[in-house]
Image (cartoon, rainbow, N blue to C red):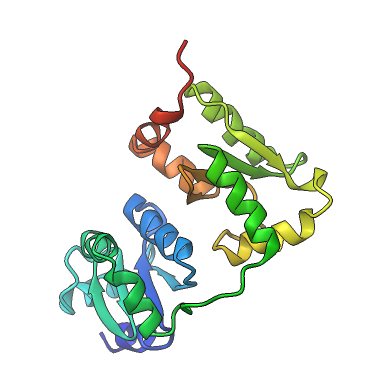
Length: 208
């Protein structure tokens, strides 16, 4: 239990998660969208950590979200805070994000692309996994906008901007649906296998 408390107090925002947990991915994506870079502790192979979270009152144990060293709750609690507008305020008070941030011009370009298109994949032409995700979306009836970074003169700067936005490093493929960061291949496949991907894509399916 002390290890959980110690880890939770080391950064302004901390999320205990499992790589196979779809709600964990959603909460991480929400924090990234709000401009936070939470510390992520995956407990896939640490049953003692998960048990310690339960003993602390985390129910369900994952995702377990801490802000400013204090337990905020699991996915439902975090979403409720986000809906009533208090989540961002908590993150600002804990200095997990700043209320005024200088916007990177490359971030503006990324924001423009994901705002104007329902499904966007930031890709590299040499990336096999990018191609696999694109084909999956097409098989599900969606034609995503595929923006190949290596064909963009500002590609290197955009790649750094994607990482700053919360994408993995290297950030390919970086998948956005409805303006929200979904993640990379692992997150997309986890959503697909759990049956959660298709409902997200349904508004963007092309009618036959």
